[in-house]
Amino acid sequence: MSASAVERIWFGTGLGARAGRAALWPAAALFRGAVALRNRGYDRGLFRTRAGAIPAISVGNLTVGGTGKTPVAAWLAGELARRGAHPAIVLRGYGDDEPAVHERLNPGVPVVVAPDRLAGLAEAARRGADVAVMDDAFQHRRTARMADVVLVAAERGLEPARLLPAGPYREPPASLRRASLVVVTRKTASADAARGVLDRAAAVSGVPGAVVHLAPGGLVRASGGGEGAVPPSLAGRRVILLTGVGEPGLVRDQLEGLGARVDLRAYPDHHAFSNSELAEAADAAAAAGADVVCTLKDAVRIGGRWPASVPLWYVSQRLTV
Image (cartoon, rainbow, N blue to C red; front, side):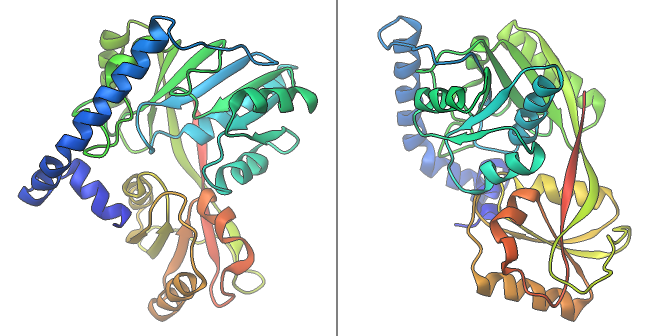
């Protein structure tokens, strides 16, 4: 099933979307029960939490994507380094893209991929780190942390909080009570809308919060095309958005906010693009006189396999607090 089809089921209001969610409700109810039992086990001390080799800060979320977790974790690691610490990024590593993105955003900061986060913290310490940022670790309760930073996307808010597979939630909003800080990230939502989500999160969690803005920065040349290609102005231009991220619709909305006319080609998160998919997108762009744009996560997955007929650009993200 394509990423766009999943989004329609999760967030759609039509009869087909409602029927899809209804069919998935029994599985979602089982998942909710399993999550509740696991969390209760940790809350009551039935499951042990273990300290790692170095202190850790977790950056996570309640949902399966779209909150800006990777850029926020990278920003936090960069801030720690600027303040004199020796941070490392420790992550589960569901694909090769996220480690490569962290290496691109913070050259010189060790990136440790480890399904066992305790082993990852030990490896980070061996590589000279004195603090770790654990990317996507809110649900990984086995490893102790100094703080839990939990992200909520302003564009989606907290309702309706449908759990997997009927919706994007890994656990319900009440779990925000475990957080040390709730950060509402906004990409296309207004500042007022983000503050409204922050107020609702505070009412649920009772913990401090903040709003950050993830705005599109400049277009960066990824690969392909002839010498001398320059980043195009997107106003009024047709763009083929080739992406496999958690919520491709938010990336599309960002580009449309810059004035682009977007043809979205969405694939599942962490999608490994085939050479034929890349060639098809490049041929379509050449025929239509369009620009091909992706995210940094997509660009590192594509690497040097992009056809040379047209340039491939990725849109950078600028984080402001």
